[in-house]
Length: 263
Image (cartoon, rainbow, N blue to C red; front, side, top):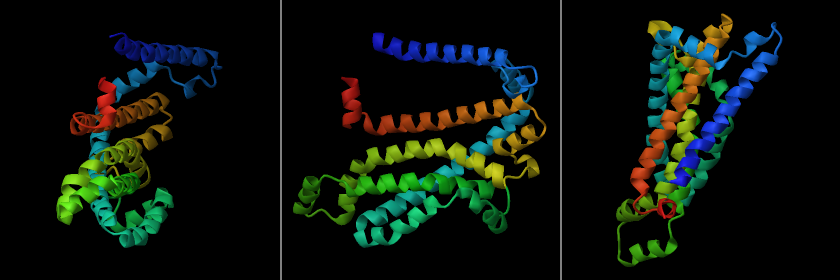
């Protein structure tokens, strides 16, 4: 009970201190610069005033983030399975995955606009590209890091390749997979925001949070801009919380990390 109270009270105290410092910093700014740092109450007011616009933007950004995130999960898991089956496939594909990861995503935006057009499709592809690499790398590592003794045991009992993958390698790779999934969950809203910022479109009320941030910035509505940032942060927390819940459901009954934390 004491540990749970500490885990609640310490972050609350730290947050209160940060808010107090925020107000203190704002108070210390000259009148010419106060507009650059809206106070939390001004941000909350802007959030209420622009609630309808931000709600629509949240829905659009969430749609792009979920579609890109889901596509990255499916494609990365398929690629990881293929690379785990053969070292030749792994050696052949991995350098190109590295090249894809090291290429700045913003470079793809003009190309994607030409290929698929501005709006949701481009946002989904950019989110996919950002989420794909941590998922495929972690999942592949998990699939090829299966305990060698267990692999030999399955071979001794003449288990088929599919049985070995289904009953041994995939369960053993789940902790690695969920590690990649947590990283991708953090990146998914960011990817959707970047995609919306660089390749988004407001056609048919399709503008997301990134597009809305451009509008607020051009209009010098800084409290609303901070409110957009706060909403994006909250969206990231929701994504990560969902992945953590799935991870707990899949692993808490048998994996050491959860067993030790329960003791």
